Image (cartoon, rainbow, N blue to C red):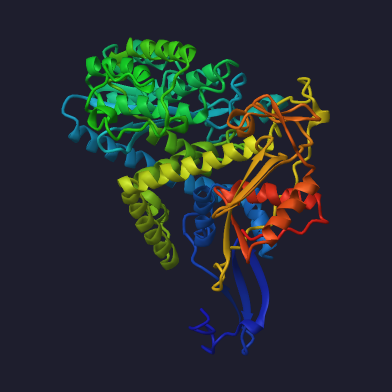
Length: 632
């Protein structure tokens, strides 16, 4: 209208001549006065002609409804964003209206995508469908309290890896509840309340709904893959088809196996010999046995029974297909076990042998395990669009957001363009660019995640992260534990963890002559420990002195286990014989004098940055009068 000009005189219109503005959400209508005196209305965007008066919603407002569902936010969040940007906020009523309009299109697209995926799965499955099933809830369960107002279930085809069916259960409707409290009849609305039972019972019920829907479409389901946490299969066989076979989920089976090992670790006698590193290696052996013996129950049974003996160095029951010792006996070292040595504790062997014997007895079941990982990923996607810290369960919003997750799972973010098209909206150039960029990224990531190099690098990063956390927790001691102050923990003996030392600055070695000095420290333990011995060497020159600590020497410290040092508070003993020890200040002064006899000494140590340098610097902070020349 600005370009066409005034309808009367055809002169161009200018925004500086706006005399009035009427706001409609994110859109507006400007009333511009022309030089001829005519006032012309100019809209800032297109409108839909779907209302009775022919003047429907502006496109931008309807797209906002799609955006809310796609981004996983609600009226409160979008209002905060607009208020911060100084953009006029759309009213909650109008916003809900646009969300409902967008929701109808999204749900239609979700159902169509499931039908297409189901047809593709049926084409690739010659002897009945094999589907994986899992459920999720809007509210997190605590292990004792399951009171979510809504839940969703999903089924994926194992051939196409696409979602072929979903269901949503809701226990409450806000409008119905308000009308009931007022003693009135609820006005006509899109009521989504369809469940009166407990939240736990939603999972079996949703599975039955999905399977009945698939059955009505003429497809036969042969196997359902799910976890062992519910009685879903019993309800399926009773109400759908008694011939449906159940296969357990591999991830839940491995998780239960690992939890069993950690339960054994809680035994005080076995706590030290069954470390987290050992558990991870045992878990790895168990997972490899499952993966390499699919549909071979007898071989799987033999491999499971051989694993405890393999961990203890007995390879008579091992198979050359998986045992590295049988493949290369002259070079094999159990590097994944503590200190690269076989396990030796007899009580632990009895426990492990009993665990693996129990699992070998269900080898028939373990040999047919499948995965529900895609269902778990879908639950995460639903949690992004339907956050657990927000309540969308009392309206149709939860069902719409689950449908949006279904669309994104099967189609990627391409569904946003299709939703706009379904609503009669132009996709928009920027929306198309964004969707294309996201689709390319999704395809690239899916391809990379299937490569062995990516999986190996991911395992290395995970191992490094956990290893670093274990080391830091061991050094720091007990810093956090549920109910620690109520359990009689000696809080008086807890020392405040000192602030972290300044970051180590790496500099190149000096170009001029310098003297390499190799040193080592023995301490009372890990974490905040005291020095008990300083030793250094340069060629034939040696330095060694024992230091009197302020705290006892831990029985697990290398100073006690390897060197045999003990301290009774006054006298230090080495293998039971008393040895002379100096105060920390005198020991550092002697070390300083020894270093001064060398030309440009630079100290080197094994694991210097992570331990020796930190302990040494902390000791020098205690004795600021001693200036020991050092470089790390």
